[in-house]
Amino acid sequence: MKLKLHVWRQKNKAAQGRMVTYDADNISPNMSFLEMLDVVNEGLITTGEDPIAFAHDCREGICGSCGVMVNGVAHGPQDATTTCQLHMRSFQDGEELYIEPWRAKGFPVLRDLVVDRSAFDRIIQAGGFVSVNTGSAQDANATPIRKSDADEAFNAAACIGCGACVAACKNASAMLFVSAKVGQLSLLPQGQPERQERALNMVSAMHEEGFGNCTNQYECEAVCPKQISTDYIARLNREFIKATLTYPDAKK
Image (cartoon, rainbow, N blue to C red; front, side, top):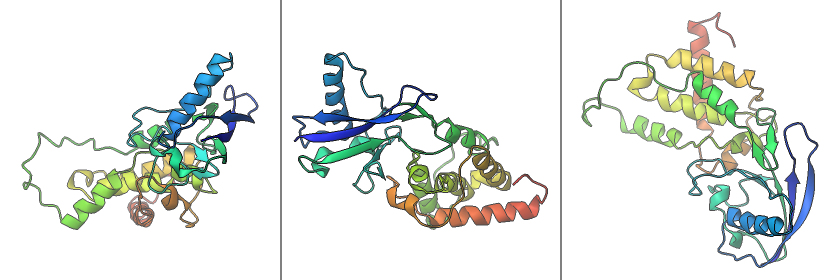
């Protein structure tokens, strides 16, 4: 395969970025998207140019660090797939690809395709955890949990925090991410003692980080590699409203 790549290049957070065009030759359809970028970088290094910076870790679709925009779509054209698991057979020979980093105030560009996702870490630190002493591991049936609740909690826990939901949303909203974290713990017994404070604190942290509001257009659900449902956003709204009734003076 031969491809024409238009890649966002930016030296650092303060620098002016721009699109740069590269030819990608002799690309195997069986390569992953990141392997294709590796091949392009080998060629750039050979000619003395700076390689394209992009984030990755597991390359198995479980860490979320690889996310980029491909032709305007977070993680690329294949549903329920992270960028590292996207293969070049999803594209046509001779196709032009536009590759950009996430675009959001909460995700400042560090270099080229790499963005700072630490805002998500700070939202988790605001309440996405259980701080009560849960003791040692319990027997499987010691704490009864309805199967429907267990299934919903498991689905929410699948969120890998990649930020695709933010990148796809016109408001750069992080509601799908926050709702998955709040929803998971609100469904489990261990999450009940801090349930209301968690909803208040995480929503507050989300706004402080500069993420926008949800306007229910479902772009986030469409690009989520783990197919997190927007039903969790409705659950988060209910959790937040209940919490504000209990703590009317809480910061919103």
